[in-house]
Image 1: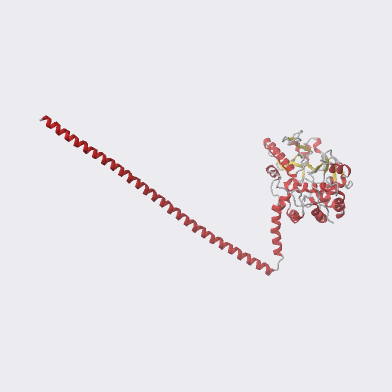
Image 2: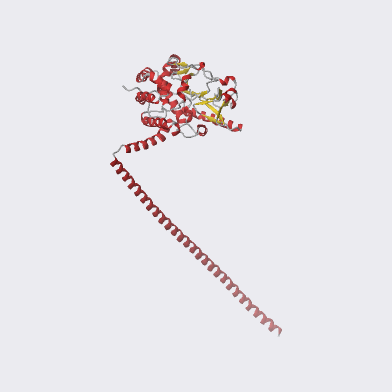
Length: 463
């Protein structure tokens, strides 16, 4: 019997992703860039966001939100503030979102004592402790530093509060199955395996006052918002399943029975793509049953093919295949997280490329004679299209010339009409002038006649 659709809720989502600073391509401690009091971003919405020093790494603590897009918008505002701060400093400082880096002994020795050590406090473990404890490693000789991308779940409704209070291990196990394992298919950084020997292993979490911190993931999702949208979307599915008062037990049983938890732990801790994919395929049908086609869900039945292709290309070519740009510039220029998340990216970008790829693969699978027929047909189609394009160009050229001729005739006619009107006006003016002159000449003759008569009278009087 299929599982019931999960009841969508709005758990508070937060994070504390870490990153690095570089000067002249060399890692420098974040204390060289960030003041001890941190860099606050107050947008007048209650709590503030903040950049802080966390050992060698810098850490962002954005204001949490129940919406992934709004959380991304807050992070974008934070990175804009950081960029403005760096620009004002006058020093060429690069922000690095690498998952792990190596700092030189010289640079490490220049840092304050508290920033030379690892910034991680002990974690709780949903599967029992395993591996090397980070407090057993000497931070002065172990020069590798990793950047975490932990997810914070805020207990902002009763069902979630009760779950975190009573059964946090179950929630973390579901987070491992749905989020941690799936992220192995996307986060292919080689440093993950070494990092998880120290911290970030499967099942690691903490219980801060606001809820639960899932500490398994690296900061890979900082490369682009669609990755963040996917990651937090997967985490939210796990939270919503386990905080459902009616169906939580059925969800937990279905997902935990579908996989071997030892395989989940191994896939995460060793960053094993093949095993993670094997695990994912075991829960894929369950995910399709509990999710549906809305922006609320990052994955659903209709985009699973696109997700598989998305993951396949990352495995073969790396994240740069999809996100070949500067992550810092991406966050600074992010206009709005809405309609730019995982759901949209899979539909608008990945799906297009997948269909092209599948068409090419289908062609390769055909017998040679069918390939030849298709190529011949495509060639004929292209030639016909080229011919049609050429004929269309000729028609446009003729139409252009005809239009020019018509415009010339219209212009000549307008000039001719203007000349005729001017000539008619000149004739009218000349006729008026002639009439005026004729009137004046007649008046002059009359006056001359009168003068002549007057002269005769004067002459006679003189006699």
